[in-house]
Structure formats: structure tokens, C-alpha cells
Image (cartoon, rainbow, N blue to C red; front, side, top):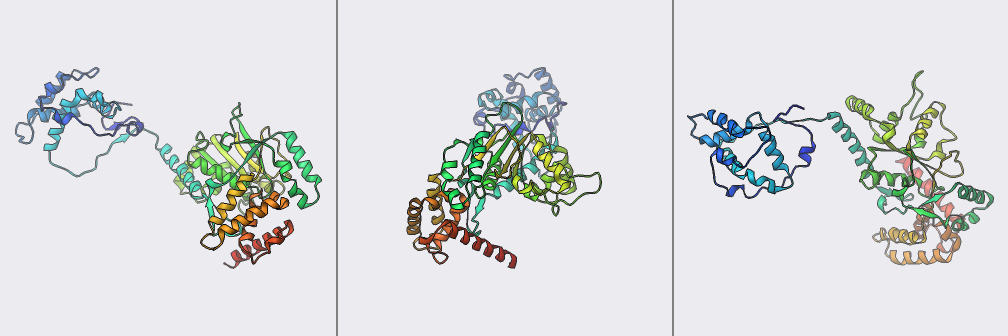
Length: 456
């Protein structure tokens, strides 16, 4: 770019500038312009020649400034590399480099303080692509949405919630052989209580992995992970959790955009068939499911321009919910999603038809998570229950002495229901709590919640 004193070549010049105060120049004496510039060297600039030219511009009838003061201001404004050299030194982290400039700064600032104040707007150009800034605004807006959606509502009492970063999400690496054996065991078990009692035998011993390390084992450019999880184990919370962590800069900052897509939303009502030879695109999904609003024409066009599906991390939640009833006109869109190079897809294991090299599994609560969750639940109810601490202690004791109930408590949704029942003695005699009664109460509460929503 042409060297222009009214233009900054890159916004980073402002972002990286040293904004700390400058001390020391005010103690320098006021010298002549020639003396003030004796220690300054600027590449490809004859300083003394410019000094002579600047002094010739002195307006002799002015009583505000001396000749040297007036020349100092004019000298700085002359089309040369002097002003850029001084500005770069002013922005430098090393303040020692500024000391040779102190005499000139003293003369220059002394002159400026003598001039009358004028209130006006001063414009300065910055050389960069403004579409990048606008697109950053869109992506920042998406991050804000993920951060605002950071509390998990209780299923049976939506008025209560807890921060998503307090979720206990345990992941394990699963080999194909292990997955096949797990599914076979579960298919061979005929009764619900038996399934629950063998939960720890099937899922108890796993090779765990931290969520942020999911992609560490990949050697190629494509990062595609299938995450299994039984009903109520926390698959959707896992998806919201990673979206929140990305939005806060804790996970996977190499991706400009993370798109969380609930696959159950791929319905005809939400995406009606288009006219012939037209189909929905991935950017259409981002607009409707991620931004969740109608963009003005300018922003809509901008998003279409800057969107890159291959540089987006897709979080595809609930493959099992859509695989058997995907509308015909949306099958191509689902195929596009599953062909993206960077994605995580969640599914229940029983309805999975996908083949992935990397499979992981949400294994539910560990034993210590159960204790922590119960404490968290009853701590939230101390204002409503006079005996919240006693109830908490009694429930933990009951769980640890009832193997079948302890088994199902490893599933987050079940533990919430157990805590809710225990906190409400009118709903069930806690001494008679069984797997059957547990699900009866869950069904009743969910029906009541549904009816409340309908009437409201």
C-alpha cells in the first residue's frame, strides 16, 4: 500500500500498540528544531533539509508559536517517513527506544498545547477487508448465543437449573468389538431391572478420555467421531457443553464456526419441499438452526459468501432420531452433513447404521458424580426444604444400599427423577422405591409438565 499518513496498513498496528504512559520527555528542555533532531536517524530521509523547508513555512505574524514550534508541527505533517518512524517507536513495547525522541516530543507537544482547542471528527483509514470484520460479528453473535444457553433446566422442574460447566460428562474410547459385545449383551437381557443391574458390568470399566482430546488421535485432516449414548445418558447436554466450551475459547479454537444441529429438526414442517431443481444447503441449516433468526439481506449475503463448510466443526445431535424417518427431500442434506470433514455425531447404539473409524461413548455418571449431583440438587432446595441436608444424606445412604437403584442412578435423567421423588414425600413412599415405581412417577410428571405447557 502507498505510504499515507492518514491510513494504517493493518488493524494489528492498533491492537499491538503500547498504550502505557510515556514518562521523561517532559523534563527535557525546549530546544531548537535542529537540536531536537540531532540524535534522530530516519532511513532515506535528509532530516536537516526537511528542517530548512519546514522553517520557511513559518507564518511571521503569528504570536502563538515560535518559529521552531511552528516548524516542529509542520515537520511532522510533511509527506515523508518521519511521522511513521516516530509512530512506530511510540507504539513499541521497548520504551528505551523512545528516549532519543524526547527533545522533539518536548518541542512538538509544547507547540500543540499553545494551539486553541477545536472539537471535530478526525477520520483515519485502516487497510483491511471489512467483510472479515462483519463476518466476525456474525460468528461472535453465535458464540454469544452458545454462552447464553449455558444453563441446564431440570426435566421435572424447569424453574430450576444449573450451569452447564458443572455437568459431569464422561467419555470413553470404544473399539468396534467392544461396541458389538455391549449391544449383544443388552439385546440378550429381557427385563428392565436386569438391564439396570448389569449397567456397571457393561459400562463400568472403560478407557476414558477428556472431551477436549477427542481429536488428538487423528493423523489425517478429516476428523469425524461417532459418540454413542443410551437414552437419558446426556448426549444433548454433551453437544451443548462442547458448543459452550468452543464459544468461551476453551475448546477447538482452530474452527471459525461451530454449528450445533439437532437432527430431529430435519422435518417437512421446518424444511418444506422447494420448487424443482432446488434443494437446501448447509448454510441454510446454519441460518435456521444456529443463528435462529431471519438475517437482513446484507448479512444473509455476507454469511453465504464467507461460510465454508469444510472449516466448520459440525455437532450433529441425534442421528437415531432421524435415520428412520428422514423426509425424502432432505436425505441429500443429511448426506452432506455426514460427508463434512469435521464433525461429531451422536446416536443411541441400537439404531446406528453408521460406520466410523473412531467411536466413543458417553458412559454416564461415575460413583463420585452421583454423590456430587445429589449434593448439588439438594443444595438448590435448601430454601424450599427445611430438612434438605437430612434428605440428601438419607438418599445417598439408600442408593448405596440398593444395588438396582444405584445402577440406574448412573444415568443422569434417572438420578434427577430419583432426587425429585425423594424431595417430594407425597409422590411416593421412598421405602417402596423400585425401578417400576420410578418410571411410573417419571411418566406422571412428564405428562403433568406437558399439560401445563399446553394450557399455558
